[in-house]
Length: 225
Image (cartoon, rainbow, N blue to C red; front, side, top):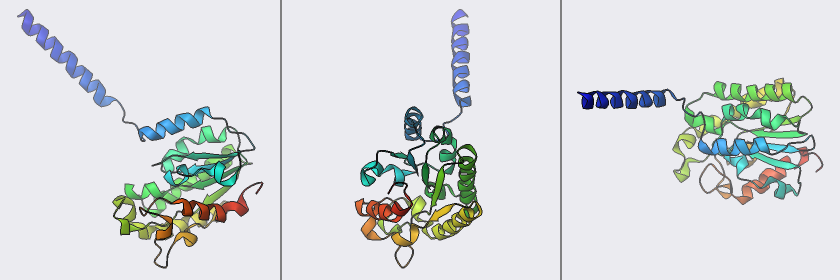
């Protein structure tokens, strides 16, 4: 009888642990997101700094080295989405940076979000930056084109034709908020609106030549250049 009760108690205890684990909220973002975001919380930002904020496209560049400017800081996180950028804005805005170059929204596409949803997420970020750091000069960059011919990142490239619609919505928001909209798309797209093969080897991310073109496009907007 005692043995039966002990087994029953053990079962109840184990079940309680499983139930408690089931109630543990799942993490909203990837492990890498929290690794990078926690680092950015520790790294200082000053009013002299220029932040490049976005997803893997931003994360993949050596911006300070490209521009030979120590005040340029990479705040990209591979896989990041509009919600992810919004949630980590406090760490980015605490030091009231001089400029922010924002490019976000591509990773919202495979989540099935509509043009309106993605534009609303970007608008939310813009409003937060303007509210919390009104002196920061914000540049809103278009999404880059995608190319499905590489048969990679199917969730992204299957909706490659939606990019121009998103960009039109972003441009309209920038106009309403009296911000500078930087059109990257038209310089990276071929005649069909796909990412040119000379700038990518997977249809989504950029080769070195792509980053050099990006640098060329935004140099006129960069403080001190």
